[in-house]
Length: 88
Image 1 (cartoon, rainbow, N blue to C red):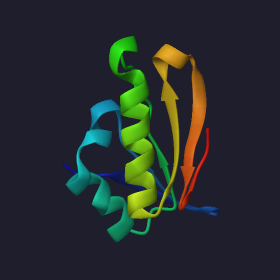
Image 2: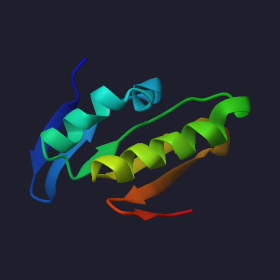
Image 3: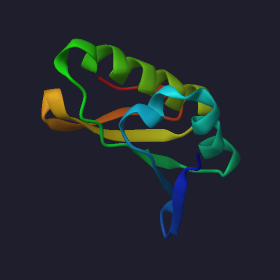
């Protein structure tokens, strides 16, 4: 797969959905393509939501991009990581 991206006045923004966040090779594209912000809506079920959010946060820090996601079980947008800082 490929990460969709868009150049904006604020930098390059990438987009993935849900379980795309679970594939390290795919998310490395964001780093290679110099994506500064990755937007990733996710409709997880309650049993895996916390683990999935933690894995996505790890991938963002690992690959050096900021991550904003909508996690359905939490019913809110969450800024999970900003390049090297994990937010909660």
